[in-house]
Length: 141
Image (cartoon, rainbow, N blue to C red; front, side, top):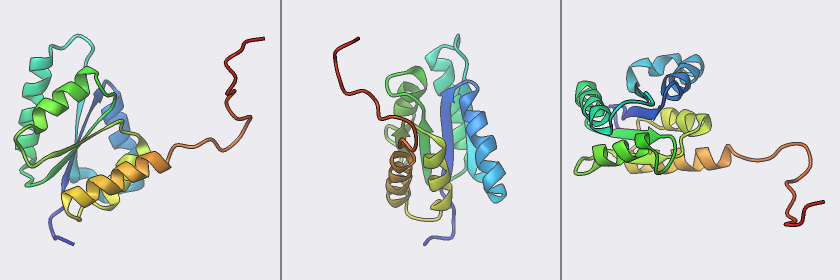
């Protein structure tokens, strides 16, 4: 385990990034300085969002950053993909709260290991726990 925490940058459609950070800080108050957010407004040009993301990445001063974006193929994830190109940062898309909490728990591990744990946490955090199973039938009544 290394002594320096990996930084986490959340990039999502506004106001999701800040809301996820607020939830995470509610659970782990000590992670405040380890998480940056970029809420992407609906009318902002991707180039503007990318410039802001680059500034946040530089401002963190972290050697290692895990970038978490919301929806594959949407502006936040497209910007995040461009952001991590040629850097030591790692990108995961499809962020949810279990993924973020797992990323926080393992922020002192090597970046690749943290990313894998976060991905697993996000996947394991999604399951049906009550009610009827989704209808597998293709026919309609």
